[in-house]
Image (cartoon, rainbow, N blue to C red; front, side, top):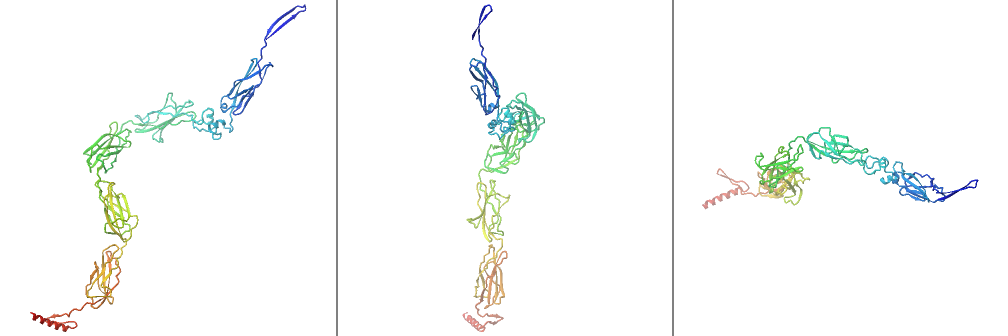
Length: 628
């Protein structure tokens, strides 16, 4: 504020004066510097504001009413190091002002665009790559690690997470109801709409299959626009098949990618006409088997139903194969998962055979055919099975094979139990040393069962074997047989001569010959042949087929003659031993009294001293007369 007084004097000496009060207006500073409008992520940015002011005596203050986060104003210099978030955001606004001490102020407004660092030149900020992938080399602008159809450059540009799926979510099946049934050959599939994170309009892909594995495609349409409400529909363009189950799924697609299919696939069944169930199959007890309860459980394999209805079952039990004598029955038995079981409702009779059948019925009371007829035997108390008969080798036989087959006649069981067999082969009938055996051997046929040996037996050796039956609860006694193994017939041993002994005499012209018995490897019956030779080696007597060890010969030997004899053994097959060593003997029979022969009233003597004998006879006759 100041005062100005003006005085005017004219040439006549007149003076005029006037006074005026005036105010000096302050002039604000003028900014003379230009701010840099770009910066680089992670690098220092500095701007020193400069200005002029006519008021040379004025003092000045700089302020930053608007400045980037993290910046600092020192005096009139703005310093800032932008970070990655500021680099990918919008340009940072700045307002710097200078004010003099008279209140005059001038402000400068501008923005700073921050550039990011991209050292690998893939269009992606290094900091963004490190933040999301851990390095700058494992991914580039074309990668899509989250599989949502947006590549990394699009994820960066759209400010979305490259590791989080940003595509549409999964639509869900709405109709037909999963697991339900339709009564038409045509249908429309309805899905609850999916949601896209970006709110984009979606396109739907419907697929219809005829198998649970989704390999047989019936129809598909991938161009269905999203419905205006909460659901999207597709009318299947083909007629479906009766009594067929179908499976369908749906997925949604945005501008980048398909979302996941609805899962699991939704199924429905086409059933326009009701049909009768199939035939159940007898399961347990199997045909001809036995049960050990008076009220047994009867089980069938479930029937199939063309309409896939839930079935019930009717069971019937009969006493006769003609199915005329019904003893128990039950209708409406609920089906099990794969088999159905009913416990007979009344006691059956012990050791009797029964017959049974089953049929299935659907919810509309339509029944299928009866099953085949089952048969079972009731036995609650086990009886010991019979022992098997030994067919071969039988007791006391000889086997012409070093590895004979052991054969039994299959045994019977009064309870009709299935039997298995145990057998043993030993070196004797004590069975202390078992050399081969078998246990729980299944029968090989309706009549016989054979057991094979693991190794050859020893020639000319006796073995014993035995077998028994086992019904799973009890075993029979053993049947036993012993046999000889003889693949090659062996000759008997050489007999040992007894009498006449060697170099001894025989006191009769018709001696008895004896010897010790031979043995036969096969234990065959043995006969003997005996020969007698004179001193010249000529056979003078022989006998064959002697069954014992003593014999005599037809005809007499010469008294005083020297003879040899020997014997050999012969078995049933004709195999002969060697002859024994010869025994030599001399016939030394005592001489009897002269023989008197009365011939037509005459007398005759023979031999030395015959005359004296005759005289003696005469005297003897006289003596006899006198005694009379």
